Every structure is written in C-alpha cells, then in structure tokens.
Image (cartoon, rainbow, N blue to C red; front, side, top):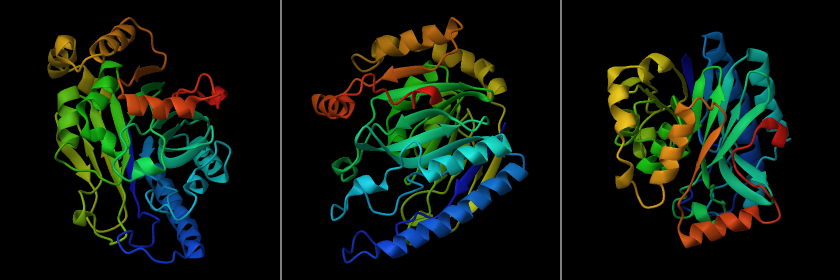
Length: 327
C-alpha cells in the first residue's frame, strides 16, 4: 500500500496570540485557494500511485478554535456540504481512500473529526477527536469512541493530533486489529509518534499542517510515515507544503515474529481501570474472525461523560462510528 500525506498550510491567516479585527473575507479566500491547491496535490499523489491519502487536521479551519468572538459552529461541515461532496467525488473518481481532517457539524455540535472516504465515493466512517487540549474544549465536543474500519487496504484507525499523546488511544485501535493509524494533525512530534507505532506494531501516518508562521519546526515536526518498528520511512520538509509518499507492507508487518510477541501477550490487568476488559473483548472479537467495524469506548471522567452525553441528547444512537448508510 502506498500512503500519500498531504502537508498543506493551515487556513488561519492571523496570529491568535495577537487578537485584532479578523477579515472574514480574507479567511474565506485563503480557504478557497488552499482547497484548490490541496486537491491538486491529492490528484498528484493519486497519479503517483497513492492508495490512501491523509490531509492535515482541521483542513477546513479558518478561525482559531479558542477564538470566541465568532460563532465557531459555522466552521463545521455538515455531512452533505459541498466540501464533503468534493472529497467523496475525488475518492470515487480516483479509486482511493482518503482520510480528511475536518471540523464537522452534526447533532447541533461541532467535532474535530477525521472522515474516511472510500473508493466507492462514500463515507466509510468518522472518528471524533477524544482528547481536547486547553482552549479547544471551549468550542469542540469530544468524541467517545475509538473505531477501526475494515477496508480493502486493511483495517484503518484514525486519531486526531492530541489523541496520539495518550497510549490508550492507539492501544485501543491496535487491540481492535488496526493495521494503520492515520493522524491528521497540527501537532505531530517524533517523540511519541514512532513510539505508538513500535509499541503497537502498526503503521502510523501523520499529516502535519504548516502553521501561520510558515515553519513547522517553530512548533513541531513535519509529516511522517512510521513503520511498525518505529522507523520513519519518509517525512515532509519543515518549511512548506509537500506530498509525502511512502510504500508500506502492513499485512507483512503484522505477520512478523515481533508482532506475534506483542499484542497476544498484552497484560490486560495492567491497563487503566475499566479499559482492559474492553480492549481484550475487542481483540477477541477481531481474532474470532468478526471483521465488522470495531470501536472501543472511552473510560471517561465524569466531566467528559457529561459532555458526550449532551452531544448524544435526542440522537440515539449517537456513536461517532457510523457507516455511510447511517449518515
């Protein structure tokens, strides 16, 4: 499988550290130009043989999530929005899978999501960012599932940025049989990304956004594809947009002796309280041959449970892992 990371500029055209009047027209124009450029890059990656494309986090972001001067709900894409349709058409026409980092608006809430589009031109599934850093939690509703989706390429999991900081998130997906975790991000760091790949023996593909300053190294590290042994196969430049292509053999990787030594011997009793049993149930379901979508729920704090409950109110079920027919 060939993975194409689409490392593009963020569409926030103002310094959030220096509040001032925001030119919304300039933001919309930057988004329009940025969308066209990014979709051209995705076409280029498909021309070069990419099977799976990954965009940056908040591809449609224009306002900073902790900027409360404007209604952030306007930033979210509905399921039938023109931008969603554009991604679906690209995936269907080029017969590729696309993981798009998008603010989505569903059930009257805004989520920081990763949306998986399939080669049939439909949404396969959606992951909503679970771990929200300070500031983002003012306007974004947290997710409460770690779904893994069965595709022709393998089993695909998705995390968004800060989620990768937490070992349990990637481990949930590994125990559910994920072959690759795709990470749209504004905060990729090689400190923990290769660690998640190595400790779970899977591929991690992270597409990092270029910040308003133009220099990724001002804040983090450039986009990268990491193999199951924690080795960086390829990475982007630190100071500009780029298509990063990497060939990975996910099924061969999962069949290696190292993989056999890792997850089957996982010590469930050492997991944080409440998560271990669900992890093992998910793994047993996968190992028994049940190839349907698998999602490990979050053992959340009372505050996070209350936030997620509000998001689900009057919408039952309201899981973030749904197939296209359910959208």
